Image (cartoon, rainbow, N blue to C red; front, side, top):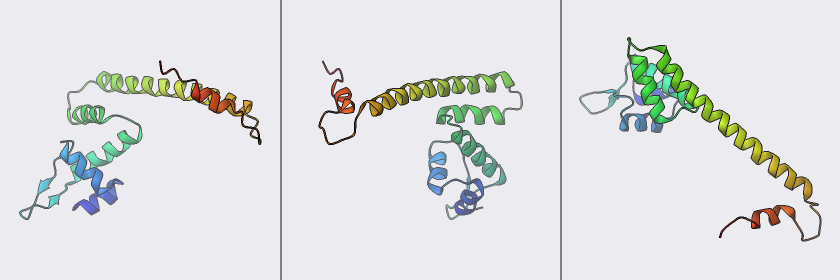
Length: 131
């Protein structure tokens, strides 16, 4: 398969596939003329990477997960640990986003949004501690 075909089948842009190759996540064969020649295994790895990235795993986590995927002697505990750490990071981000939302909702509610110049939103933004 060429890069266009594998990109379509894996659901990834060719630029992303080239990037994954540049950083060593995949290593497609090269034909005599230098074109990439993707095998079925490359397609599976690209689909794997696409799904892992869609779940928010970092490139380094993806590298580790791919190595575990390829390791027939792996222990599922290793995979679970990576997923649990990522889940914890997601939970922390959700808590931060909820806090941001609550703060912003309070500011929006406090702002009259009329012709007057006073605005609690701007007041709050200007009270950033820069000292």
